[in-house]
Image 1 (cartoon, helix red, strand yellow):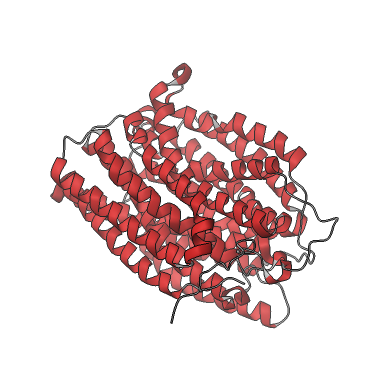
Image 2 (image 1 turned 30 degrees about the vertical axis):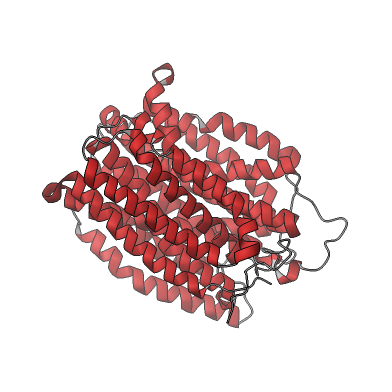
Length: 487
């Protein structure tokens, strides 16, 4: 039987939910091109900041005498707060207005970035990073929800593809920009510039958003699900915190106790959410969302993709600086081909999906695997004298593959999502992606760092690459479960 493409002959409705398929009222708010650029800029800030510190960690350690455990907290504090509060941020946007939450998120993100850049010691930096992660959780869910509520047809397909490209490219851009800022050392700011640069960008985005982003909210706002919020936070913290902090802290008792709590918290969360929906209350994460095939299959594939991507970006940052002795700028520039290729591939995605359907995701995953294999061969043959230019072929192939996977997956998840659930659905999707990135840093990063003493940097790097290659193989198989068509 021949496979039907994901998008039919009209690429206009790949992300149009059933509830939004009806003609849009004349009075409905529309997102202008400048408004779209503004919300994408707001989306880029939190995503860039998850990775921007990777190349700055050595200088943070030197200036603040942080130590390995504290450096892990600089990364983990942001990631855990971010992932834990994302769904709540989406729900609050549905309730009080997405533009309002977007503006509050931008303002708070700028202020917490300033606090990070001015931190006098490591503990202050960690606290500011936690607050910055919470601000990001207010900001990011409003982007997809606004796109869902203010666009339709071809404009929505293009906007979601641009969001997907922004989401992927921002991760690599974070390390490129971080390396550049640390190397330039503006006015002697050193690592502080990677945080201070957010302040003027957030200010400009705030001014633009106030003028160009329309206000939207759910037509049926509901109260915050306090028990669900608390249980989701407990589940994510009990999983992500020990996995990201346990190794650096020597796996103390608290890390094992938290891991033991995780399955109970996760099960309790599912039970509470099912009961809430069954009794007519509004759960934080409606279980009925996962009855939608596009949501279920898309999220199932986003998890391993994000685990591999997050782990790769962390391991590459450490291996290039500690193993190949690249400076921060060279380490960042080596990822530039990946950024460019990812973005160009994400732009081509809508037309390719129109013609080839879900085969685009499967092909992208296979191309990503080829890129990893080329990189592994390059590392095996050329270590430790690999110039930056020698990494360009593998990085380019990797970027093409990843750019064909992530934006299409985001479109799949959103394709059948009712507009009334745009905020919570976007929050669930971004939480899944963010948790996957954090798990990747924890798992692949822990594997890499654990092998360093015995195997050396090259072989530890190769082990991490081969592990990610296995993850990519599994992701490719999951692509066969994606829906063949989009309604």
